Length: 234
Image (cartoon, rainbow, N blue to C red; front, side):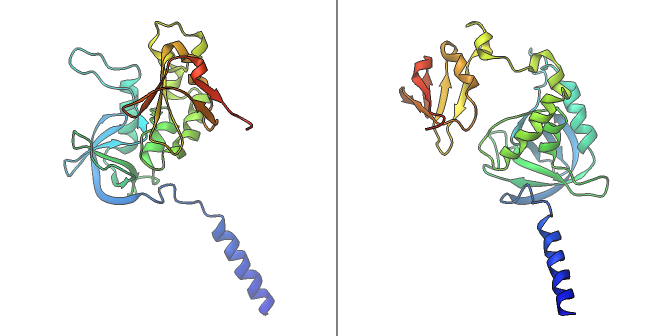
């Protein structure tokens, strides 16, 4: 009989070990509210009057003054409306809590019985309504895999020509997308890749590198491909 109980306890322990980890563990759960308005695919307003900017993602921007809305703006906004409008939710902070417009900067999780609990930041990326925006907030690394899946499946904005990822070597020096910024793991320093070194934008994340240049304002400018050496395998 003792052996039987031991076997039961071991089975229960194994089942507990298989439970999915909390994706927002380590963030700070804070305010609750109900979504009453969706501004665009990464911003909403709750019934307290607080505006919320979903961290870690970037949706197509809407029209502003004389500027037209970005491609897929309306579709992205409707996607967040369909997912979140009218639902109860909770904010989870993973860094800076407010921006200069007094918007709450947070991850957002739905909490009511109107549907399954949804991590809205992830949901928008997984459905192709937004791209990953690598800001300083925590939990953003968990958004990369669903973005890759959405891109591979041509979901949402990824089906449009405007959001196809170009190969840097094929871009002319006149094209805006030929330059980028790269973040160094464990460092506040950002590498600013100029158009003259655009091929370096294709360096894979996690690759050890050695860089040369002048640091100004927290950025190191890379104007030539020789200013960055990849050290993979060292």
